[in-house]
Image (tube, rainbow, N blue to C red):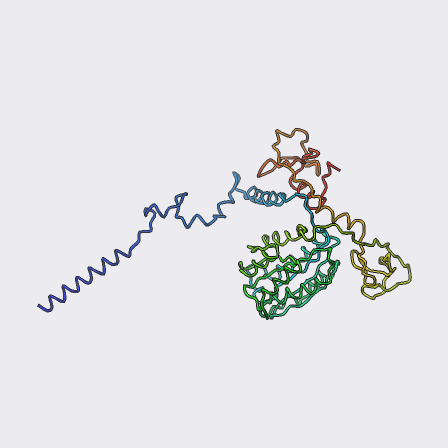
Length: 415
């Protein structure tokens, strides 16, 4: 009898375990509950993923060239849409670049590494910055091991900054960065900047942490009091304190997904930002237009590097010689510029209007691009490929449209 009772108990336990397994079982095949299905017929959590491999499709001949061309044209069309509103901007800028030199910049999510991809991109950034802001100045700061080091001081010579970026010592990564020390050093660098120019700090960080010696809230209040605009590009993820500093100082904050996105985000800092209300006043600024000096066979020392040279530029106030333009005279402090530099700085104040894309049947005036004389709408994967100036009504191709707005800043048909 005892043995029979034990067998009955074991059978009951097995039945209860089987019932429990049936209760824990969830049907996840395609014929499951409709509440898990999304609008497209798949599961709801699958809708968040973008099936990038479905975007590129072969054409009738089995080639991917047309698909790749379509993607490239979409990127170009995105570049041509820009803000053309005429607002007051500061054409004299003082920008400090802050580069993260911590161990986190050695990650290989950007090829070959974060630091090498950043340094290569910053070389292009420096050249483009001085091309569009010829009378502005730039400085570079690196932070690692909890310290901040100034690589270059404020100057308008792009060669000095590019040489500093190419220095191999910048590739030596160590420790953690210090955002507070970098911002304090940047503010100390910007103290000598004149009041009529804007003060900006652009940071590129790959670390999610910062090793600060004090309260960063005090640094934030000092930035707001000095009207310094802080912008940052994060290479890893969004950090609350980084985004808050940028928001409080009316700067830009973004997280770069890849190298191309890093370039697009960083190059958004090249056009000058709008002037804050407290500085939206018109002031007269003294500037000197030096003449080019040619000493022939006798070299003379320059006031900037104290080196002998045969050529240079003579300051109209103190008659000292400087090597390059634009710059500030090291003797009397007069800003020295040339007329082309000053003229190129005004295109931000009066931007060229965006060209409108028009169908071919609505524009029968021209069959070829007014700029390069290429056939319009010949091999275009997206859209009509015909962009018309709203003033002169001339038609341009997409490449000429981008060239007019990013390089010429003047419509050839209107000129």
